[in-house]
Image (cartoon, rainbow over all chains, first blue to last red):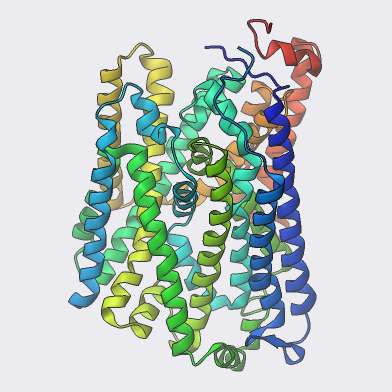
Length: 93
Length: 491
């Protein structure tokens, strides 16, 4: 019932880095979402501006924010994520 | 109810049934039954992985409950729902390749297998199995009730007949096909959810006379509807933000989602799933909740939130197309319950029976037990859903947040913090679930945040303090752990 998990496995270094990228992305996502929603949305309704018919706070926070996250995830995966094997042939056998 | 709506729905149920049936073929000749049945042999590709994660996560509340609340609250609730974009990438990135690699080394088939090998503790296993069985069983029953009510309202069948139809179509493919059938049907269901949202969103915008027009109508009725603060200004930024814990990052702790993070084939599948998952989950959440808001000027005065989505579909679409679009919430419910049924079954078979009752069971034995347990559970849920007991309804209220509070730290810190130990894990689980129930009962939405926030913090503090406190008395500090992890001596 005992299995070796060598914490120095080089694949884990890659994985740790990618987990941090996840945390950074979610932080950016939250700041963008919060900033536009409450930064622009807290004004009085009469002074709202509109993009594509939607209130600007909503457009930037939810519609543009979603698009930005999709782009960031694509860029992160294409340029920062590395492919590693999951099986153990090359491990410390 | 008219036939044109019913026919597409029934065709949908039949198609799902056959896909499930077809997917069960590879199960017949395999010598690793457990891994096949509960994890699809870890062979999921990127597209299926993304779809099964989203479809499992997206449930009745995304398609029925959520749009209903958005109808009453306005754009503020759409804002809140957008916290769920994070689930599209966060879970897979944070658990990531390390979880996939470690799960393979441990030969883990369930989340509890992972916890068992990581913490080497009977108590961690029993507590986890207990929380999964109790919470997910009640969540499952609640979804079945939702599914049956939906069929009931769309077709005019009696509740019992609707429940039977629903139960039969889900159970057959889960029982015979296992995880592979669940993942494949999830994929079809996910596609139905995606395109259903797209069609209905477009039709609703057109019926409302365009975006500008709808927003004008909304602000004429009540300007608060187009602010981030809800119809009466009561959605505070803190409250809305706290949903990032419940439906955003906390999802890492949901066993039905986590188990999918050990089911994929290779790095490529994971990369692809990250991109597809983010796009699809974001679109569905944005679209469905916007539909709820946009429905308001078109169909004013709906007083039961759950009826908004079915009613707007019938209003803005021709009947046959409404039938197809209404297969989307059905798909959302089915794709959630099938995964829950399987995961509860795996907790009973793999985590309790094989660990503690009969560890030396033969492969054939395991196969029979798995099929039997899944069937019995399905029948039990069916009976429960016929007239749900109060206890079950009460438990369902905790299922989402309670499981997150129980599992998030034992999983995440178990993976990344080597000092974390079984004492910390047990403390964290007990404190998480216990404080969640207490807060929910005596001080809901404490300090203006969703109830889940404090229990997650408390269980984090418990995990860290107890792990550190018990670390010294047993072992040398962390760096020696590098070698002792291997136990049999590295090199």
